[in-house]
Length: 216
Image (cartoon, rainbow, N blue to C red; front, side, top):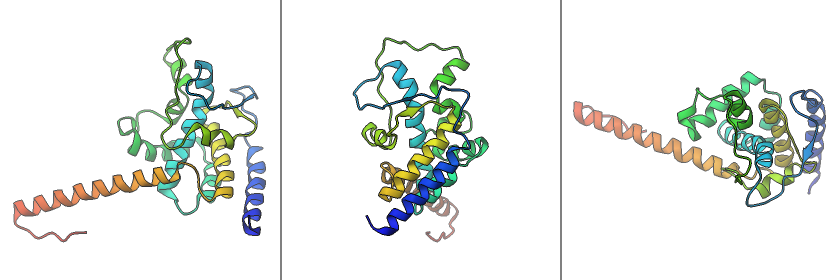
């Protein structure tokens, strides 16, 4: 590791220590940290505890790949200071690509923390059914090392901000994050598809009207 990398990591850690003090205590959850073990199946309690963090990491990586693919550390440090409203505004980017049927209808809180959503509609999970995490862009084995102290519980918005800090550390050490390339490829493929659809629609209209349309 060269001196530049060491300086960057130290700078990120100092920024994180300052930022964490702003929301270190979340009155909605206990100050408990549980290790995320790599397993094929999880209990309901484990799933409800770990899933918000895993979901937030998916969302954050996708938004970073869309908004600022060249500067992951800067992006994540900025995201760690997002207000709840800013999180919701940026979450729509993720929804537009991955969950378009929910875009603008289901907020980040209830998408991230299914336990909070279940409580809001008085739904009860089956505690005897094993659960498997629905991770889109990385593996549990990638997430677990990001949280050496274990994973705590917080409300969805503080979970987002805390995950942003952990991703900043990871990106400072590794230059990128585990799911970045997958996210970036999905974005490019989707945009290329819609551009093709647009070009074909314009060509069809031009043929129908007898006009000439220049290709992009």
